[in-house]
Image (cartoon, rainbow, N blue to C red):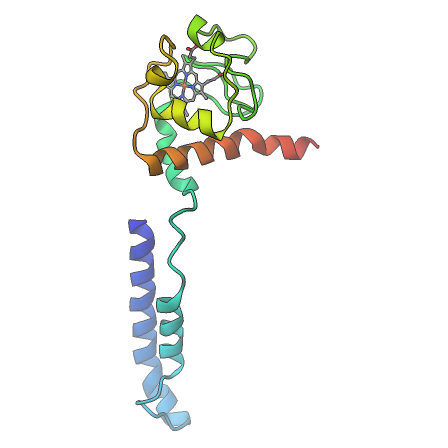
Amino acid sequence: MRTKTLFIYTLIAISGLVGCEAKPTKKNSETVDLASPGKGNDAMAKIIAAPVPDTNEPDLANGRRQFTKCKVCHTLKKGESHKVGPNLYHILGRKAASMEGFRYSKALADSGLMWNEGTLDQWVKNPHQFVPGSRMSFLGIRDDKARKDVLAYVLKETTMEKAEKN
Ligand code: HEC
């Protein structure tokens, strides 16, 4: 978010500079009414009027950064090995504790959970509260935005190959 704002300010600054440089040359070729908005000003106005990024959309770049918290324990791609935690390929729509070759806690295995966006959200928010006795040694991400971003990233990375396969 901060980087985006900075980027927009940089654009405004650059277009301001270009505008200043362009004015004297324009003066030579055609009459320029300084009171009316010139091309440079139009461009600037467009930048200023550009819609503010929708904050309801998940920020995948932030999600990727957030995933560094999970990365020590989880892989996302098909065929990648389990680490401390299971590989999460095609986690969405899967029964909890159903990745082959991973030894789950009894608590998660017996939970009867299906992983959808709601259950994943609660799990990542506070795994120990959601499934008491689970073995995921992770306190959870309480920040709603950070959690939304990381889950969007995980789901994108773990379901992408599904479309490629079809
Ligand atoms: C310290 C290691 C560790 C970290 C960090 C960690 N996990 Fe886990 N995760 C585990 C373990 C271990 C399990 C299996 C839990 C069990 O059997 O009770 C698990 C299970 C899961 C499951 C359920 C998998 C299944 O097959 O049912 C999901 C989803 C998951 N983790 C997502 C995440 C996400 C997203 C993050 C980061 C925000 C994260 N985990 C961070 C170790 C970790």
